[in-house]
Image: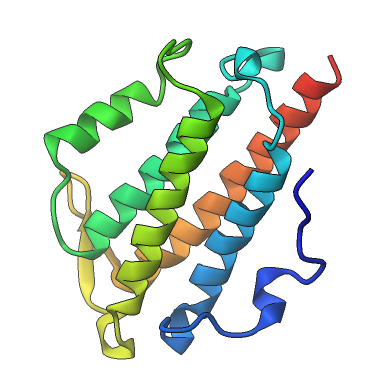
Length: 171
């Protein structure tokens, strides 16, 4: 099993290149990434789409973790989602995708974390309160709200993923 640093990410100090006000966002996302790697190190692909007690599968959570970060960064950039992003969103709810492995979903999440951190590094404090709209309805928020939600949502789904993995491992 992978060794997790005994200090949580936020306790290790600032993430280089990330503005001070966005450190909590980076810390939360990196903490989820680190724990996800440890949790899924030996997770079998055969359990990827299982839904114990009819809860969301590990595969769903892994796809959703990547997808949410991607979509929220797009909204933070004041852009619209692409057709590819809408297609990926639809796939999040499709079970038993035979061409997908646990490792491929972890790799996708790692890439999305890297892209998200890069985006955070491009921002300054003055960017954070810029108005943004979410989705086709352009629900009002701001850059900081989107990025806070990205961190919170990542943590929430990691927690759900953790419980699902533990239930599946003990069946």
